[in-house]
Amino acid sequence: MATSNRVDIEKMLIIGAGQLGMAVLRALVPRVKSATTPVSVLVSPKFLESPRDSGRQHYTELEALGVQFIPLDLAAAGEADLAELFGRFRTVINCTGFVVGPGTQLRVTRAILQAGVPRYFPWQFGVDYDVVGKGSGQPVFDEQYDVRTLLRSQGKTEWVIVSTGMFTSFLFEPDFDVVNLQTRTVHALGSWDTCVTVTTPEDIGRLTTEILLEEPCIANEVVFVAGDTISYGKLADIVEAVTRKSVKRVEWTLEELKASLARDPENLMLRYRVGFANGTGMWWDKSDTYNYKKGIDTVDTEGWLRQHLKVDS
Image (cartoon, rainbow, N blue to C red; front, side, top):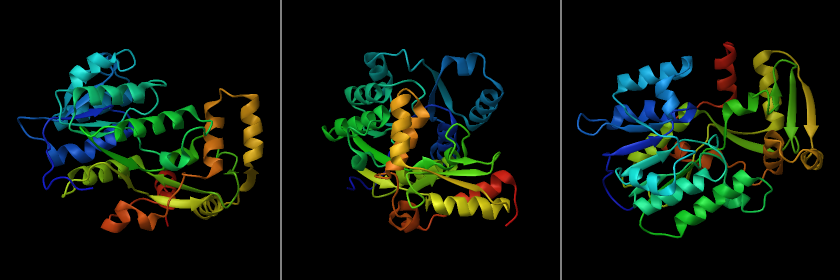
């Protein structure tokens, strides 16, 4: 649904300066900043007080971009305090993820609505929670579904959800253990035909910026993007082709993963494996995405792996 022919780029707040927040800021700030209304970023007070090496680099980079820092402990802030802060902005993009604990996304969303923020991009940079629905057994997924329900229950704040699938790098995360480059093993979640959509944070930052600045203005829509949509079988083929080495292929069936989760119900990675093994809502056809229809190139799984292994084509 298009609501306007102009995107108001004043008074923007990005929540979080982690991997995704930085990607959004790098793409967005050069397009929208002005001398009178700099883009603001909400960060942990520790980010400013004693930044680690990566944090220090991010601080220096954001300072050079002219970003205004707002220190706040998001985990400790109440809804009223958040609403007072959010009320100063016309557009808020939430890039915090789940690191601040369960319930945070709902608390932030309620504060956004209480403040009457005109436009909100919630932390929904993931799977298709409408298809996943409630009762998946993944508390994080349930909360994300509740966020969508809350946003759709009102008509004052316009919202835009950018569905991205999994971060491409997560396929190669050692704790997730889908691709283990050390042992040259690839695990299929559910089956070798089960599919997953993935996108790099850098592409998410670029595409979120394009979606935000699209005219006529996009509002009250779920916008799908994708760097790649592949089966786990195809993923194993890619790893072999890029590394030029054979891999051991191990299928983790949904039943096996559910049994493992029943024995260790608090294991976050097992929860994610079960969710993605289900397959439902975890992928969509790349030809149906915003970036495909707009002709915007994105990094696919093979391209990401070649970049990070520094392997020539």
